[in-house]
Length: 454
Image: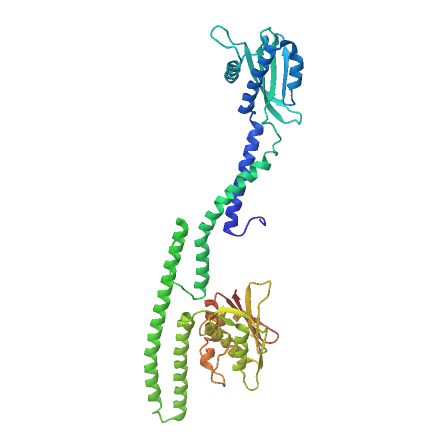
């Protein structure tokens, strides 16, 4: 499994190469199992040489033995025989054609002069010196003095199975790659564009519909993504408009009740009712912010997370609290800064309310693919069974750590205090960037970790 490429392009190229290698393997197996045939060029060369030697022997019959010994080679031998071929087996159709071709090459053929007798046998897998099975041709032609000129030509086709691969594999593989790679790039281009668009969309960025290009499957996938993105965008816009209208309509009766409460004579009752109305107003504002998520329309830009964290630590400084930044001097990242600042600010507000020492951390480990932001405090932790539930809207736990109350600094709206929305808003903003937000208990304290994809 480690040898399988991870990318689609790599897998397509690997598939082509494996197919080429399997085709070579099948050809090698077929060649080993099937009988070798005499190469046509070798057969034609053999017949031409036999005709030339026949003409030479007819003109100089006394020098036949010396000449035949001189023109022999490792793959071709010629000798003289007397009547041995009379008992040769009958020729098949292919051999008769070769014998006829030999007769046509012989000199002196005319209507009054019959062609010399000729005979051809295509030998069956004659083993070569290296043990490799090889085909051959045994040809005979009768000389005018009655003797027979016999010649054997070994086909050059016989060779070790691996020897042709030195040439055939590069010749067959390189053209396949040269032709296939541009087409693979064309096929994968819309897939890569869709991947980048999906990543941007997961961060709340939408640059409009993607161009529908490429193969049919890629066009259908792109069209489906465009439809999904448009429906999602309309859904969010409709939800935002609806909640804005609800929030606006609720402000009027709350304001009216506040005016009426001011007319109550009982101070204790009036104060209690005013606190209830303030809580209702805060719930309306925070619910609208949580659902509408102001960061939706904020454009992404390159920011320095280290500077953002340092400024946030200085802004949230409180009497009796120690808040500091720990991390690199610079940490560039592309994000929606207001949304990310709101998420970290909510976590820091929560840490300041329940701890005396708060550390804002930032890092980008080389071995990881995420940018890590963390808010660490020394306050009371959260029960392990409640670490996930605290992210639910309006979650109110019994632990003192988890009871959202408006701080002395009056920044309750910034942190989502009072209605249990601070962590929900923080997680919503982080997930809008494609990241994750997790909580873990320390000894003592709590660590909120934000992992943002690079």
